[in-house]
Image (cartoon, rainbow, N blue to C red; front, top):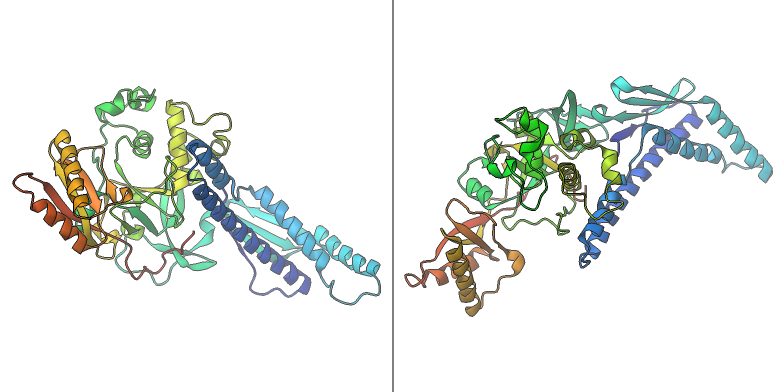
Length: 466
């Protein structure tokens, strides 16, 4: 997991040799950033190409280790890499000018390399997250780390809860600031969310999005040994010392492992996101943009950064070393924490506790194209679904597997299966077919909308593949 930084070159540099070195530094960082992007794209493409491989863990292992190691460096490593680039650049300075011999050209290069070696120095200011690069007393560049990379956007957007920031070198992408522990950190202003059936119902009714579980009190199955797991959150020291609520870390663990959803998941990457099954996340109900500037900052938890690994009781280095000797961590509490951390990093996950205000949800208005067929009893619902599909098929309505979704849990209204159609007209045709079967078969169904990003993306929304 790499250190986040950016390079700044002084607006004016009087000495020509120093200006040459500053240009070399700027080119070095541009090349480094592009190489990191190319590596990320390569990892995604390789993962997709291997989609038919039966060894999902091996695919995840290669993808996760490659992603986590991509651009991983320390400040000392950055200094070493800069020195190599500067030494090469110093040797090239004035090389194009005429020389009476090859030896004279080499001598010129050696002169400038010596000048570099005797005058180059770094000044670190850890308190300000700043590394200044100098030739003698003259600055030829600076590296800004963490919060020093950002400046407040001016003017600020209207009707926001959190101030909007931009990076010094890229005003096109917006950020907001939040607190993690005693530190202030930044996260992209616009996150994305793949919707579920509850979300689309709330959006249609102009209501806030709600997490499935609104209470911090643990469910019985969270306190007992969870099926197929050798762990129980009720046996952890955090819970034993507090019999009322789970610790915050255990609530995050329960959410990320899919046991009880007290948060609403979003992502801050535009790249494809892959599940633990090795498949790309796609929501039957569509996707929306979440404006984090309109969400209470105290409810925002960016759990994919190095600073956030304490939620899972692991370190960044733990993640890079994982899965060297076995396909999957043991099914213990520590093993589950490790899997949860890997999932959060891989999906660039940002959690929002309990509620997302409706004004923070940006959509295209939606298209009614989803049919949910249900019954209050699970066995009857399965029969309903089979009969509905028989009717669709007999009428020439083909529905691909990826255009269906069967939740494993009971909705308040019953046991559902959802079908997505290409248009509102196709949805009406399908629902009319079921309606004709009444009263012989008392089909129960609801029509829902599928949503997408607004046609005009908001200013500050990041470009694709970032």
